[in-house]
Image (cartoon, rainbow, N blue to C red):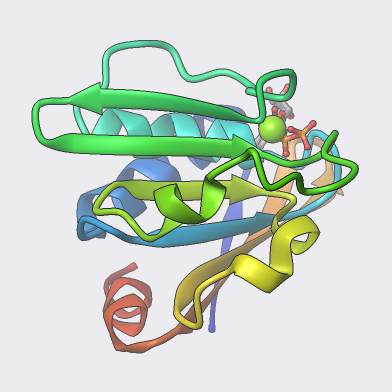
Length: 148
Ligand SMILES: Nc1ncnc2c1ncn2[C@@H]1O[C@H](COP(=O)(O)OP(=O)(O)OP(=O)(O)O)[C@@H](O)[C@H]1O
Ligand SMILES: [Mg+2]
């Protein structure tokens, strides 16, 4: 487990950037935290690290947005408005692909989550300060956590 503190949205994006540089294809990140805690802000930085030029914004109304840059693929998933997981949504296929999956509100689909992932928990401490905690499940994520 590793704890970081940021004092602005820009710092949270930069932390996402640092994490993004360490991710291997097929990585899965679970982002937990209240509304406006900074999950999407962090994801923007991951996109920057992958060379994605398109602006990454909240995919709330679409559940999943897919970004690509050369061989890098980023699946940004926001399950906040997902009431029931229909069999029509092949989220599991994305999670098990060689793209990087970043999932906001992941507990809504806990039954399809992989055994190994990087859990990132966001806490709003007020005054633009956020606590961001990283917990690795699995060796490849321990490596990421170690280098942060
Ligand atoms: N230190 C900080 N880190 C991240 N965001 C911050 C910070 N300080 C202020 N903010 C602001 O908080 C908001 C975070 O919004 P963001 O969309 O990233 O949250 P979220 O966790 O994705 O929320 P949601 O669950 O609604 O998708 C932004 O408006 C951002 O500018
Ligand atoms: Mg969000």
